[in-house]
Length: 186
Image (cartoon, one colour):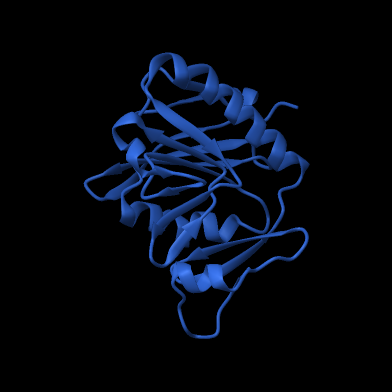
């Protein structure tokens, strides 16, 4: 759910509002406040499985850091988001600050829920593309599908759609092959 009073906000103005309502999370996307419900069990299960699979691969084979929501990512003056999973390559670790990321991560995963579907596929996809997130994954627990977008010459290409029984392989993290059934298993 997006709400605005016709004026776009900066991150500082957004933070000054000190928004809090039990059961909701808030982000700032393109200067507009996005209010969403806290993740449900299916979402949390998917998030846990993805984290486990990424942690198995990344620490051993690649230098970089993995984070998960809720964790603030300050993309620019009008965008403060909390992706479900975030990877920052070692060469970009300078953007990792105390308590947040100040800059553009290398890989972002958003897990769809009924309340985030439009934002994750619309404004956030365009935002991540515009700001240069190298890989953007969308995990859909209800459809049991993973979509992988890779930034090529400033635009996202949908390079993989993993469905039940299939796999997706990261271009950014070679050798990271995710079995779709493992992501959506209970």
